[in-house]
Each structure stands twice: as C-alpha cells, then as structure tokens.
Amino acid sequence: MIRPLALMLLVLLGSCGSRETAPLSPYEALRAHKDSLMRFDAESPFRKGNIPFEGLQYFPVNAGWKLRALFRKPEFRQAVVLATSKGEPRSMLHEGRLEFEAEGKKLSLQAFSLEGDDGRLFIPFKDLTTGKETYGAGRYLEAMKEPGDSVWLDFNLCYQPYCAYNLEYSCPLVPAENTLPVAVRAGEKSKGGR
Image (cartoon, rainbow, N blue to C red; front, side):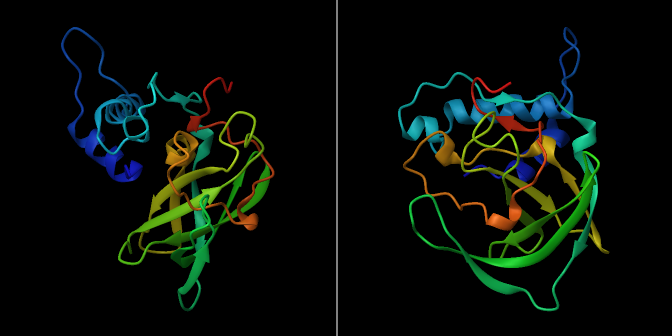
C-alpha cells in the first residue's frame, strides 16, 4: 500500500518543473505522482483488480485544513484491535488523542500506529462528506510525531483506502469516536464528488 506521507516527502524533495511550464505546487506534484503509481504500480488496487484508472479526484487545496493539533498522549500506549472491511481484526497501538479547532468547532480524533511504525500516526476518520462526496467507510490521514505536545495535521493529504477502489482489499474501519461533525472538504474524494 502506498504510504502517502512518505510519498509526499519524496515528491517534495525531488520535484521540479521544466523550463516550458510552471513548476507544480507540492500538492499538485504529489497528486500527479500518486496518479502515476495508481496507473502503473503492480500493487495498485486498479492494476490488481484490472479496473480502468481515470485519475483520482480531489477537493481543491484548502489552507484552513492544515492545522496544529494538541497531542494528548496516554501514559502507556495500549494495543487495540480495529475492525476491517473484510472482518479480519487489525492490531494497532493507540497513540493518543489529537485536539484541534476547525470550522469554528473544537474537534478531536484518536490516533493509532502499527507496531514498529513509531514515528507515524494513523488517523482514520469520517466527516459530513462521508458517503456523499467521499468513500462511505471513511478516509485516512497520516501525520508525523514531533517533539513536544503538538502535531501538524494536513487534511489536504487525507486519502481514501484501497478498498474504496477494489473490494478485495481489507481496510481498517473508522472507530465511532473518530466521526467529525463538520465537512472536511480537503484531500481525496470520490469520483463525482463535488
């Protein structure tokens, strides 16, 4: 599975424009690179499912959805099990709660990690676009842990799981407490979503 945050860092470090065209913004470069991987990579849910690929869909980049969150870490990280789209349990570590403000509301999301993935936070979530403009089972966001008690969250980088495109994949489901009472119109969206 493509790791969007790691992919973004590679694109940001290695992207450059030609002399004939304006350079792509970091978001445009990331999206173009991800489209290329989805079209050509053997692990792509489109390639694996022999599904025609017409390009991923995104909301316009929204600076208001790149924000700092207070990271409330538990005294001890506990192992938790998240349900998946195929009924197979997925073991993760509960990393803590992210608290932030957006759309004039105080919001929070639970953050998780895979064992051995200590620097990266996995944040599955639903919002008011879920099932309308975005995949009905929710979307994912990743963030990097930082020194101190805050973390950057950039919802412009959130993405739909592979099972949104190919039901053969098993994807972690969003815990009930990670449903936001706002519309996050940032990041990847469903085809036809506005």
